[in-house]
Image (tube, rainbow, N blue to C red):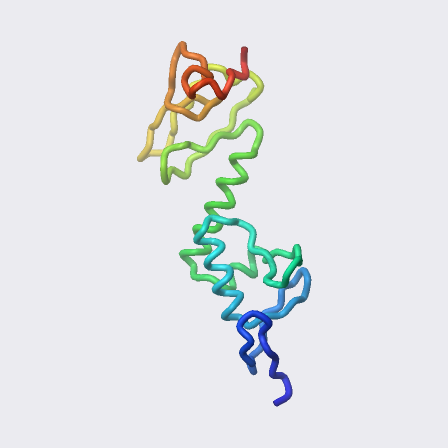
Length: 154
């Protein structure tokens, strides 16, 4: 039958339209890509690579959204934001589990002994901007976290 293709992952013939990665144009059956995407996201990966060996292409956020449930896509967005915030200069995500709050500081170079009080209505956790641990007034971050994080402001 014209239009039938064999998925290179599951080896089943697919008479429906296959899923094609926008970046590399590799094609697989939608079911295989959907399963691959869901597993990657449930394992807290934010990148979903092409299933073709040695291909560096990744699914775009819109492709991911078209493949997974709304709940999984929301978790993907939250994880993506958390990873971005962890790398952002001058921004701190509240380290309390499940707290979505983040805050920026004017001068992140002098972060020694800056107390962060989460402003989220259901949180209020106090932590150190530098080491992201529970607030420890008068104690250097290195002492507080076992000697691994020297105070950036000293």
